[in-house]
Image 1 (cartoon, one colour):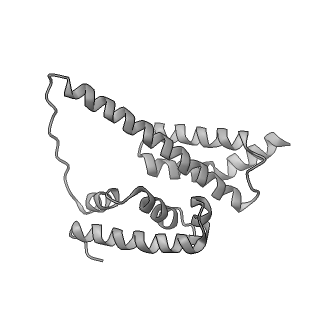
Image 2 (spheres, rainbow, N blue to C red):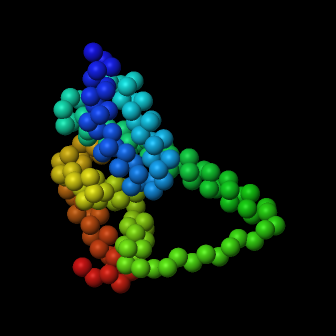
Length: 166
């Protein structure tokens, strides 16, 4: 019974969780690692996982926390690499990226705080309502709407800094 429920949840939600993780990591292998950890957590805590559509929201919450852990590990790795590079004799290559409109939007989005990126991504990309996003983020629906409003305003300012008018 337990394995049958897990298989149903996995089949129903794998694609949503994978695409969410892929958008947050931009690397297929990292996204796969995140999804594996999310569903490992789901297996371990299957009794805590709500039934029905609430289960997907629960999985998004697990994925969000798993991604945060991966991000912290990536930053630790980058700090270590920077220390190693500082002690290395080889010069760094200066590579400049071309700025097209998609790159400008991505740059503006990248300058937002992670909390702003979370709420905007959950609503705009994942298609959740503010109330559903609130459940994923662990806050009230009112708080989620306020966070969404403020995140949209900050994003608009960042887009303006990139020369993109709304």
